[in-house]
Length: 213
Image (tube, rainbow, N blue to C red; front, side, top):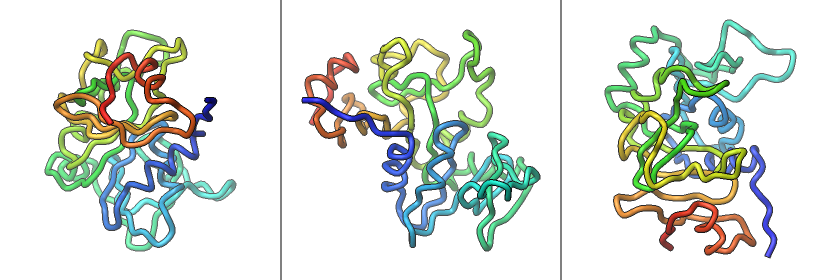
């Protein structure tokens, strides 16, 4: 059977679907920032940015950007009613103090048991420092990863053991990708869902690891 990959917007909407009402959420730099544009109508989600914002809204309309109002990735954002600004030291205290319900991060690699590697100095265009990712990965009550399942070379980014520098150990609970949503458990990967038409055996072949049903 043939299958269609999730588009970037479809993937962002898939992540947003699982964010529950009332959650306080940090969206990491890169692909995860798009989740803010897909929060279901009527669902109250409080978005946090480590540069000192609580209560971010979706991206502004074209021409309405305010570059004094940006997220940690330097992208213009909006502020919802009741939103607040504060010093980034206070923001990191929120992260380290366990006050975030969910963080959604990008990654270079995630192990089957939830080890996270999302920074590297070893290749062009790589993220050169870990930034706030360590604080987020360990401080949030749930850490989710949103990423392409495969590299541009067709290699799985879900691995038995990470070869990139580790950001956190056994911290990732879920992996959201263009082909499947996976849970990371102490026993390994477990399937949450996959795109229509993708056979389970083919998914396991692409990843190179067993995926429990």
